[in-house]
Image (cartoon, protein in one colour):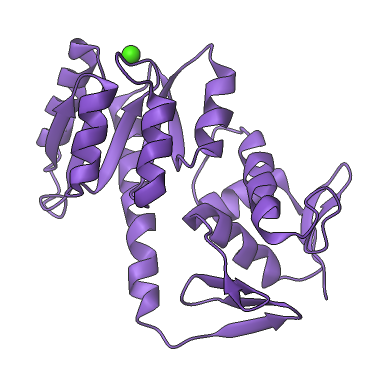
Length: 236
Ligand code: CA
């Protein structure tokens, strides 16, 4: 068992005690510390206490559902959120991502897969902190400036609030101006691991990014669609 997880604390917000227990058991075995909540309200309170490194968040919860919890946490925190969604609830995945969840995993899931996702999302969340130590590396695209190292984007001098994924997608495309990438390529390159082929994740992230980036998200200037192929960043 690895020992480098010992400092990491995972908040499990899940009302089904049997599922919560088995997750807790497996995470503890892997060296994580855990905290549990069995309804959305208690979960939100614990999430806002701010001493966890990642949140596992069920969708269907008593008192407050997972989407509401996700939205409220995102208002104040960029902590990684991994949603637990039921297989038949396809729409949940997209909605969760739109509300700012970093990732989702479909029930029933294997513990190895869950732990791999947890590791990947924690690693990803720590990356910007390391990057922030690096010198600024600002690329200028007309009225848009992207600091490739420090995860900062400014438009007309004003900082944009992007999520980690949105920034990474933007950076990936902007570093490769005019080159078109398929959704599958972007999933692999930007999300960084096998993503079980749900390419709508890319579409949702592009849509969110355009809403923040573009003057008219319906007529984008930066993140362009290549019909039938994918997306690219247009040379300004
Ligand atoms: Ca539930």
